Each structure stands twice: as structure tokens, then as C-alpha cells.
Length: 205
Image (cartoon, rainbow, N blue to C red; front, side, top):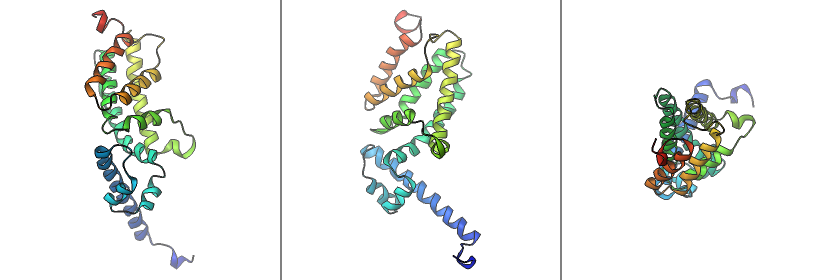
């Protein structure tokens, strides 16, 4: 390739803008399709709805899980912000429970989303993947939840031997089995909280 064949700066910017637009269209289409048909919705259908070819979808999102995690990144960003807001709560145990409730609600927007979230929470990929948007958002969400958990633990609202990872796994499991039953999710989390937060719930605290 000669220097005359190299794209000009303006052309590079146009290409990059087009790539960003395609990615945004794919995410919007995926959100619409998955909310209607669940996480197993046709990827060809997602591409058609976005107005691009299936090859373009796969260039942006090589696997279905990559696409789901990209959608989850916004969810994780929101949960991180919620966690930071709850850090000023005068009731650390209740703040942690409120955050876990929000976590369950936000990863059950469409069928199959919770299962993908659980996979992403278990995925500790090294290298470039660790610096990707979804991975960064997931870490920020974890950090916010961990801060709430540590604060509740320091206040005596969570047993000294408990670990945040287990609380998050428990919330993820509740989300997976109750994704079509929000009321059941609240009941199960309340039931879990009676053991997670001594002196509450069944003990009449």
C-alpha cells in the first residue's frame, strides 16, 4: 500500500464513527429482541433489526455472550452508581440488602440475562479482555458492592466470616431461578437476609 492508498484523517474518523454507529445500533436491536424473545433470540434477527449484516455483528461481538455482556455493562455501571449512593446510608445492613435487591432486578430485564450475568461474574479473563468495557464495568460494580458489604460487616450487620463473593453468588442464583417472578425474588432475598444479617427478619430485630 502506497501513501496515496492510505486513508486520510477525515476518512479514518468517518470509518470510526460508522463503527460506533453500527455497534450502538446492534446493542439497541439486541436489547429490543432479547426483551421480547429472551437471550436466545436469533442473532440474524438482531443484525437485520440493526440494519447490518451478520458478519458485522460477529466482528463487534464474536459470541452471544460477548453481546450479552456488552448489554450488561450498562447495568453494571448503574449498579456501581447505586452502590456509591448507598454508602452514605445510616443503616449499612439495609443498604447492602437494597443493593442486592437492585442487582437482582436489573439483571432480570429479559429471560436469560441473569444466567449471562452469572457467567460474566465468574469470568476472570486475563489480557486485553480484562480491560474491555464490560470487564471494567463489572469490576466497578463488584467494588461498589464490596464497599457496601465491608461497611455492613464493620457495623456488625453481616457475620465476620461471610464474604462478599458468596453474597453476590447468592443474589445471582436467586435472579436465575426467579427471573419471571419478581415477588419471589424479594421473598427469597428477605429469607436469605435473615441469616445474612443477624437480628433482622425472623429474629424480630
